[in-house]
Length: 194
Image (cartoon, rainbow, N blue to C red; front, side, top):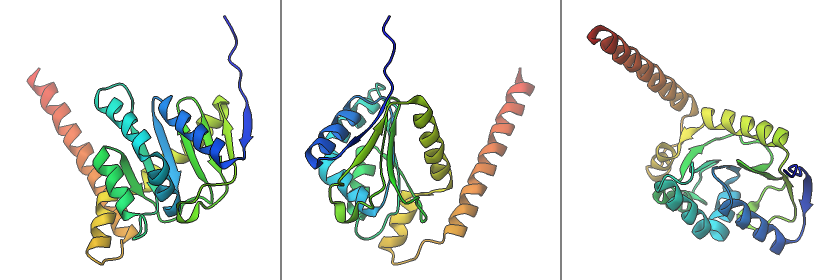
C-alpha cells in the first residue's frame, strides 16, 4: 500500500488557478467556500456550471453539497440567487476574514487577495495536508454558525432594508431554542409512548 503524499504548493498562473479550482470542485465530496462579494461573483462567472454538476450529484445523494459564506450585497445578489436556486446553501457574514478559502474533504485552497469585481486571483495556496484542512474547516464552521441565512439577507436588500445582524442573531438563537424544545417534546412523547 502506497503512503499518501501530503503537500502545500502555490499556484500562480491564472489559467492554472482556474484549472486547479475546476478539478478541486469536480473531485470533491463536499465543498465549503468563504469568499468576499467579488469572490462570489468570481465563483459564479468561472465555476457556476461546474458547481451545478456537483449540486446534481448532491441531489442524487452522491455529494454532501456546497456551502458558501459571503457578504451579500447589490453587486453579487444575482449570483447568490442563482447558486441558491441551483441548490447551494449560503450564509451572509458581515465581517469575513481577509482571505478567501475553499475546503473540500481532500484539499484546501486559499488566497490572501480580495477577489474584487470577480477578477481571477494571481496566486492560490493549495494543500492536502489534513491538519490544514481541519484547521480551515473549523474556521469555516465558525463563520457558518454566525452567518445569516442568505434568503433573509436577499429579502432585506430587495426591500431596501439594512440587515440587522443583532436581530438576525437573536432570531437564529430563538430558532435553535425552539428546535431544541421541539426535540425535547418529541423525545418525551416517544419515551412516554413506549
